Image 1: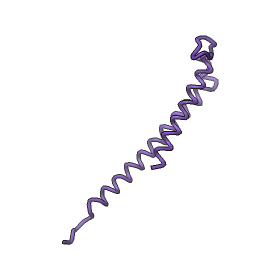
Image 2: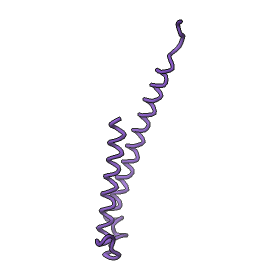
Image 3: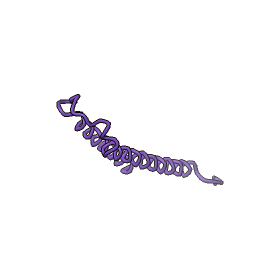
Image 4: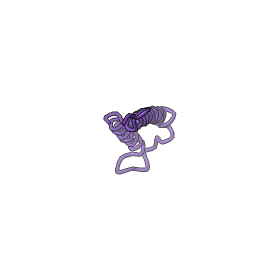
Length: 87
């Protein structure tokens, strides 16, 4: 029997491609926003707010823990980007 129109699996494939494309775009936009926030947080205007030796966090001064938290956060962002683009 002949069908008029497109089969459902083709339409579903197109929908998945569009969904995957929008997920990639969203991941990139969120990564750019994170790195813009990171740039402000670890340079002059942002680090001035947290530039204290005390309190200690896990035995290191707070300002070093601040930098470490942003670095670990960037690792998480890169892992999310890698998982998004390797699909």
